[in-house]
Image (cartoon, rainbow, N blue to C red):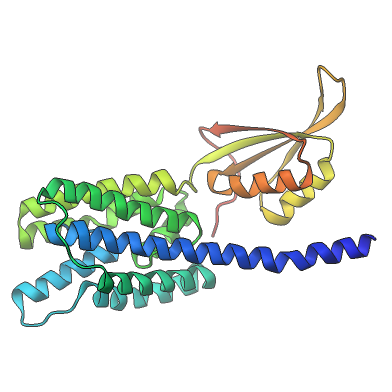
Length: 297
């Protein structure tokens, strides 16, 4: 019976993994659609520039259209600019992460060609704010699911993992060149509205993608060994075990204390529920962590 049960559980793993990958691809495609909608419905008609390589592609496209007889669409430029970034992501971040980035860039290019450039509002501030919000949601959820929209996302992810800082900080820093270029070439007003878009989008990204935030989780369970083994098999985090006794039932239990990132909370909840659905779990916000805390390389 034991062997048949183990084989049954192993047979479920590929299906669960496949379903997870399908959901991730769906999120990446939705993120690409949101980015394209933010550009064609809000930012491009208002001549306001987006963040990252998308904004850089906009900027180059506008410069070519205004000062040369050459015209290259934002979508094609976005694809060309992402080639070196995708190579870097393949070498430093991971193959699957880079594949999803390539999928995102490809679908963004397709959606930019499908969605018409329409001026939804004549108010440039509304275009800047809503364009930043929609783009930030698209990038934030794509990053949260372990993928990227390519370009500066890959660079920001590498820097965030190395220094354990919010990715939005790196987006904002790297986008300074876009703001300066937009202000110099197209006027100070366009640069200021671009600054508004970048600020709104980075705030949305940090609100959704919360890998840098730390949580302390206390798990009271009678299945200490099973829970500990399941956590170690799925998360590379240290665990402190303390004796615990129920005040009402007087039962002897143990308490596992673990510090994780908010990004890992969903996986930890799944692990605890699968091993011991009756475990009592308390999750608390952690202000700071001193000493060794593993950061992703």
